[in-house]
Image 1 (cartoon, rainbow, N blue to C red):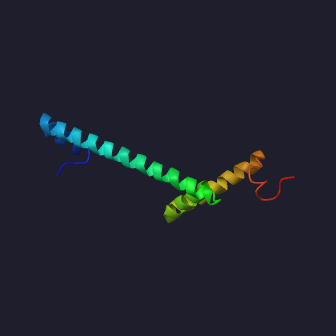
Image 2: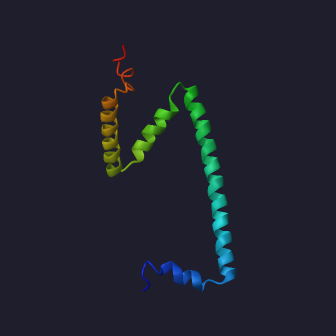
Image 3: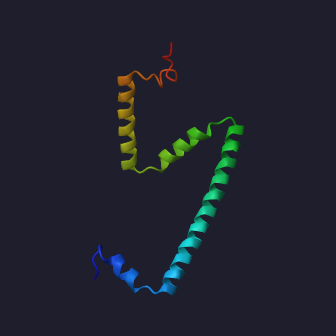
Length: 106
């Protein structure tokens, strides 16, 4: 059994130019497919945002909630910790970012 350090070295040296060329083409084709899928997904998101705005909703807020929903417990804990640190920093530098939203703006 090869160690992890040498796993890629032996495989690379054993490949023939023809198989390396086939692998290169396969990776290229996959990259093209992924970029096409990404472009399609971005177009779908753009259309969805317009639909959401048309219904008077905030697509950015909905996307943030959706991202939060997809986080696992550890990622949520880390996000909560970051939010706490950010709030401490805001208070420390006197950044009234959320004062208006909290009805404290004067």
